[in-house]
Length: 546
Ligand SMILES: [Zn+2]
Ligand SMILES: [Zn+2]
Image (cartoon, rainbow, N blue to C red; front, side):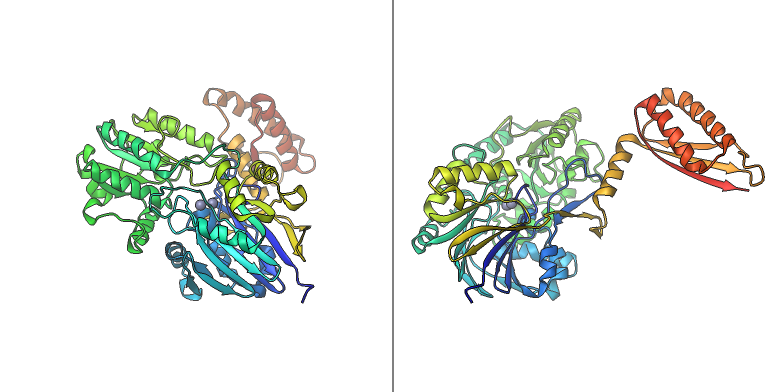
């Protein structure tokens, strides 16, 4: 019995912002916390999203006794259908989180085969050897929880995503009393959200954006378009409240936003009167100063509504002069460039754009340094593991913990795949498994490896050349002029010179005709094109012999 170890294995979210997933293992049982996705970086072309590599769980799939989802954001729920497709374990979530997870599962036709369990903040569930207590935390979505996980080795606290907001939009602050109570019982290890560990002070209350939004509504003469994440339910409530004050009707654009609104209203987490909401079609027929539209795309994603509006490729409606666009969310680290480009394009198309550098129209849902310190002081953990953040955030958070008196040897700054073990109250770093990712490209899961992404990068950067040679079977010489098609790298005014040069080289190479003509030709063309254009396109050569 005593040879049973407690093992904590981060599978995602440690060393990055996104695709959060954690395994807590005791004896022969594993509890999974969250199963999120991450949107790809700019240079991962054609990848829709990426999910954690959870091979570790697949190898032990019989041992997984439950999956807890801490809240309804995509970086905690977005991989859930990929997980339950392969692992049969019950899901535990609070009512709103459950509703949002069920939406995902029903889209994948998986809902009927998964056992769903509703838990309440303040409630408890026995899951295998783990006694889990759910405590309420403030965040930018209602009904988020942190976890107190009682194990035979000791008590684990997992903060989920949290902030200490005394005046949250839903008037439901973080459960400080419970955190104090945990510390009275003795906490083996605290794992806490590090997203804002490099921000000094306190994260402002969600309420502070209301005056800024009010100012926007007071001065906008045309339509107002507010862009945020489809799952930032608190922001929808705030926009709805202000729309009522300024007598504008509210329309939600896009499927994900409408479905999230429907579930949140049904479950009582969004209080929006029926007569406030209109369809997009209705909104487009109304006077511009009588409507506000909410849509996705605040991260500059090209395929989102805002992304399409910025490039004039949105099907249902277009930007018009007098529109005010509000970007109500911080760029996720790595997305800054595409967000700024989107803002520039929106201005170019005639919209007035309000973003957080101009007015406080957004506030973070994550704790800053003083709140992170308060959490550590409330919980008084013996050990500390920073979670949810890039490596710089994790290190900063670990520094804070040491400042507060937790000895360095009891702080573990680890990344995905790096296990931590506890035995008789002592923490030890375990083995490190590769903590990779799996890409999801449309319906394909995991087929797109790094090499395909590299090829797509090459295509995007340097273009392609297709050469078709009609070769005479008896003479092995060209029967016709070679056919050359290029895409993506030739500037028109240079193209004639370049094509003539390529044609000449192809003729010479075929005339020489020694060895593998395709390989020879590919190398010859590549060095010629590189000399002329400094590009390395992908070259495809086909031959037809007659
Ligand atoms: Zn979150
Ligand atoms: Zn998160």
